Image 1: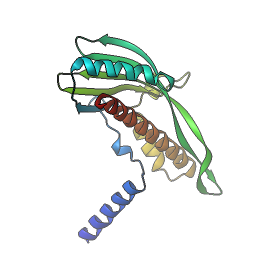
Image 2: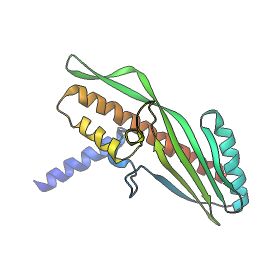
Image 3: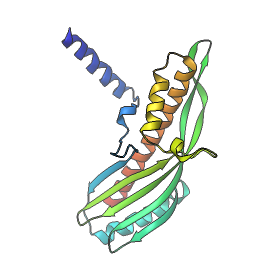
Image 4: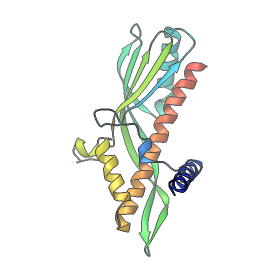
Length: 194
């Protein structure tokens, strides 16, 4: 019986990956309870070459990513910027006791700190201090941390459909944030390789 449960679990896990479903468990949580994305890239080229490419990437993305550079240390190989971007996500509602995806998407503003450390043969990209600002809300409720993730988990596990639909919308929002941040980090990596 245990083997059958294990096979069913593995089948369910594989099918959810194949269907592209996002899981709250895939969100990277730092020791302080906040969401923190980190990537290390082995790169060819000098630190100066990678610095120039990174600065060009920041300039080129200014149409989609609002960026204010806070630290620009070429000698030390450190770029730190405060960034803002918009993330679109699916919305859900309960209709006749069925949960349905709506035909339009929600949009959420995402603020975060982007840190790029250019070491001798390695580049480290860190996204931290992630915030989903809502006017009039205190930071404890807008900071992207275990508190928001656990609240979404509770909504998803609720017996009440209206709570579950709110949880599905939050899951979609978190999936969009994850996809955007991972995509941005990959874009930085591909810029450094060119």
